[in-house]
Image (cartoon, rainbow, N blue to C red):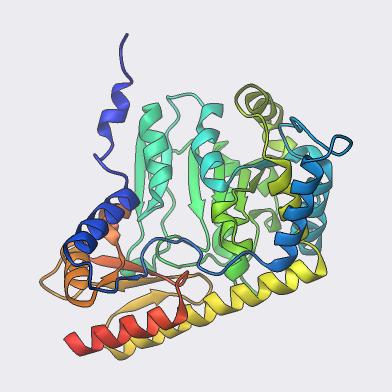
Length: 387
C-alpha cells in the first residue's frame, strides 16, 4: 500500500478547523468571557417556516407505508430540478434541460468531486485569496496550479492566466473578498475559456446577495458560457440549509461532461434525501421566497453595519455590498493570524485570518455577516474601546 502523497502538501489543519481549535482553547481558558463569532460563514437565522413545514410533511410521508420513499434518482427529483430551472434561470434568459441539473448535498461536496472529471495533468488557475477547497482538491489530485493574485491594487479582480489553464475556478460574489465581476469582466473569462478549450468551475453560492442590477447572477447570462462552464449553487447561504445540506450543480450538455458527471454520481452518490429536497422545493413557493428575501435582507443589513462600522474605526475595508463578507486590512505591525489572536484575546471577537485563503490574503481578515446583528454591534463597540 502506498498513500496518496499529494495530501501531504496540505496544511496540517483545515482553515476553519484551526479557527475552531484556537477559539475553543481560549473559551476553555476563559469560561466567563462572551465570545462573538464573526468568522465562519455559517448562517444564524433559523430555517424559514414554509421550509420547516414542508420538511415536516416529508418526514410524515417517510413514516407511512404508502408514501415512504427509498433511494431517489442520483441527480435529484424532477420536480426540484424543474423548479430550479423555472425560478433561478429562465427569468434571466437562460434555457436549461432538466438533464443538466444535478441535486447534491451541498456546493462544497460538488466542488471537491468535480475534479474527478479531469485528468491529473490538467493545469488549474485559481484566483487567490480563495475558498480553500479549490486549492486543496487540486493538490489532492496532483494538478499544477497557477495562482492569480487578487489584491487591492487590481481591485481584487484577477488577471487572465499567463500560462494556458485547463481548469479555472471562479467564485462570484467572491469568498472571501466580497468582490464581484461585471458582465464585461465575466465575458473575458468565458471568451478565454472558449479560445483555449478550458472549463470554468463557477461557484455562485452567494448570488442571492447581489444588489447591483448590472452584476450577472449566473455565468450562463454570458453568451457561449454553456460551452465552457459548470455552475455550482447552494441552498445553505440563501435558505439556511447549512445544517440540512442541499445544493445543485449545472453541467451543460455543450461542455461534453454532462454524461460523465451523471455516470460518476450514479457510482459514488446515492442521492440527496427526499426530506431535504422537499425543503428546497418549498424555497420556491411564494411564502418561501418572501421568507428568504427577509433573511437575505437581514444579512445584507448586518454587512452594511460591519462595513460602515469598521470604516468609522479607521479600517481599510471592501466587500459587504453584493456579498456577505467584509475584507479588512489588518493594522501595521500585525499579520493575519496575530491580529486574529489579538481580537480574540482582547475583544473576544472571532474573525477569519486572510492568510488561510492564500498568500494574497496575508495582511487581511474576513468578517462574516452571517452573524447576529447584536453581536456585530457589540463587536464594533469592543473594537472601538481598544482603539
